[in-house]
Length: 373
Image (cartoon, rainbow, N blue to C red; front, side, top):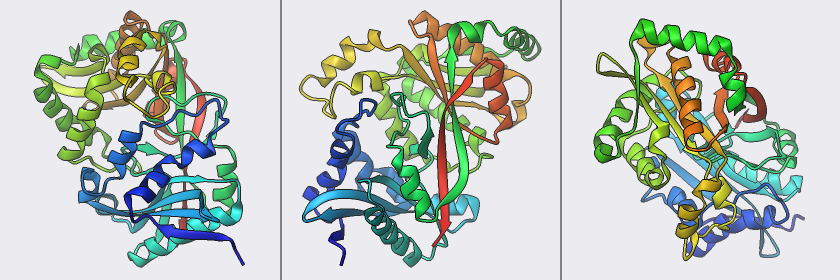
């Protein structure tokens, strides 16, 4: 008889056990970056997180003799299923000891909950959606994750695949180096031609009119990403919440709008890799975390291209190359010469081609898994 017990998170104390489990799993892992505890509480809060206005979830803990050894969330995202005409449930926030029985019991619990909601398959990991931390790291373990990217032990691949999950899609992360990008004669030529032909002008975020700029972002974001596999549109409330969280760590010169005839046709969100700072904060912003955020910014050597989107009518005109050229040069101006473009769907040929033109190299691969319930 198994000595593993699976229970539903029902109290604040159990939720904190759920949140703090990674500190046990990654105790001796030099590459893990602790999440800020306040952020984990916020994203898992079914009342305050606007995600749960179109979704629901159940959180499960695995315990052995009262000690937490695993966790998982089962998620029903109505907006995803409406957008894609699917009946897909998701699992997320998966953390587990290296024990197949424990993992199987967690997946069984998520599977049963998802099936009880009338859904026909389970996909993940999604924490809690494709607009948040997404997918399992399957290649590129000997490096700290960039901001808002996932990280996990290598044995999670075995635990997940042994349960019967199969690959649904791979996502790539490209490493970009300033000198290699700027040495691309093709990129330099294409972006110059695109600028001349289109008349596009690239400008940075205007922090003095932040709310107006946020409305501009809302107009562009969902339209540019809609055709992508697994995409879920963000509601206005979700975008507002994201902007509130990121506003204090945004580098305005790296948040770019592209305009043609005073119309916004594209957008790029590039974030400094604050994981290099968060790693030293051990999950706590107070009492000294805010001071570290302010004083250690200059130590950050990486940036991440989080979003780069062009309106459909303006795609395939080389405008993405103009953004890439601007991003690399502007990042250099603030002391950043290393970048990650992530994540990029394996079959998004336009984005993959753009990364190759920048002399980028795939240095990490992430995977979304799926199985029938």
